[in-house]
Length: 465
Image (cartoon, rainbow, N blue to C red; front, side, top):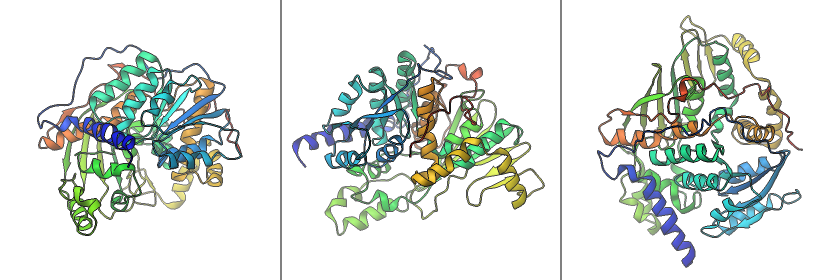
């Protein structure tokens, strides 16, 4: 490792990781609070329309190339810059653009992400780095006049959540967290059903991100600087909440008629990660620093109560040999839905799920037009996560080109990400309850739902062959 890269690891990886973990330095130190006066309401905000959306991507490990593969096929997109401190990753991403009109500038220096944000020929910055870097990069980009699309979660501390909110309100730049599970077919359908009253009053939601990541987290070639394994060894609580929580929060109109009030979080011991680290360290010197760490528990269960009296059960387990499971259970006074374990199910009462024939009829009735339109394209493009990546990226660009509000705003990014530090505090304090900040400063009472399910506004941007 050369001197420049070694310095980057020390100053960016370790220092940023320590900052992200700062709320646990003192057991009884509550995450920072503040009396926030809303400078400008970003809920429902529509920025000036952009005929061309000039895009830069910072981080080209896992998610960056996935977005790149889609963005290069969307009308009106110009990919202007690619950035990663690993030259080989930047070069591989650039090669994906061969034969296209895109000719991005390349950046591989330790601080080059700042140069990307400072460019005059960029409108939208995708931040797809390790998540403890997301908030500083997003804030810097907005301060330099750029809209931001951040991978999940958008922040690792309450202070960072407030920084995102305050910067977006001051600059009037979008900060959208790219929660792609909100664009999955069943999740969009149940959101449509909720909007049309199928569930009656929604009273509870079950959600999770549970899937075995043991192989990935201990793979020396999977994640840069073993950053995921380091997070599991330095954080507690639910450190990856948004895939399950985002779709449920939208069904409940969180920040738009309701808000998270408080949570409690309970966590098991670690029965697997330290044992695996010790096993690997016995034959591989590389893993010796990991063998002495204490890791977060196998299962975290966080319960959230909303101001309007709804409840949410949120789980995170990335170690046990569990199939991928986001649960997505919606329970109301008239109906219910359950996505995982498969097959997906719907109910209207009588202690049972509807028949297969009834289920198909309900799917036909409540599936939005856009889902049908995009499914074939997603299959042709082999777009990730069941086509949700395509729908998410396409709709973001279409909204920017038509001057429309985005599906997820900075208050969503802050509230959903805040579960990371708040659940950590609760776990470290004998699962005591802790309030969730109101990042909207009371505007949740009058904010309107802003995900246009049928895309009757806009919808003009084409996906290119």
